[in-house]
Image (cartoon, rainbow, N blue to C red; front, top):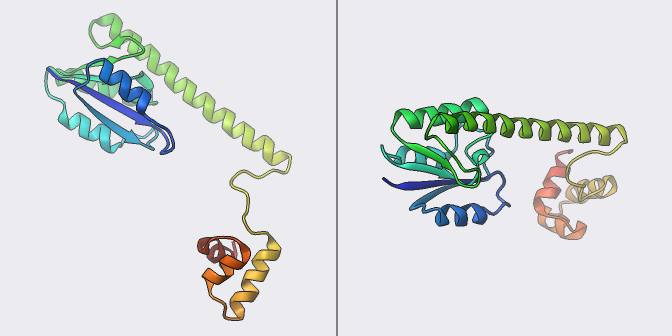
Length: 184
């Protein structure tokens, strides 16, 4: 029997160290970690590798249930597949396990709440973006170059000045200059 961990962070900027430390403290012998992968995705490279690695009698551990996924149906299918293969499941901080009827019932309930939390977050984000748009604000990163600088970039390019030199003159990257030369 091997204790195998799986950790996941949704963005590349997030640090999985908290999850890794908890899984190691719980006895994980090996940990698979997905970086920058949403829990709503069913295809995750490290999760797929982890599932391939697991053998009968092993225990798959996650720091928290929502690290396995945010889609109730998908997570329950994963846990069912593990059970059929003779692999146990354990969520370290939630104290959930696939052992016993109560454990399975609690997993189902907790997954429903994890999916609800994700859906509420999406609704709030959409509502916030709509409110900002109604007030004349646009989401996204602020423009590096204003319309006057974009016109200046086109003028300089027309005079034969190289894109890297235009970028230096305007204080922006070569990619930004190309973006504004293409009419964005």
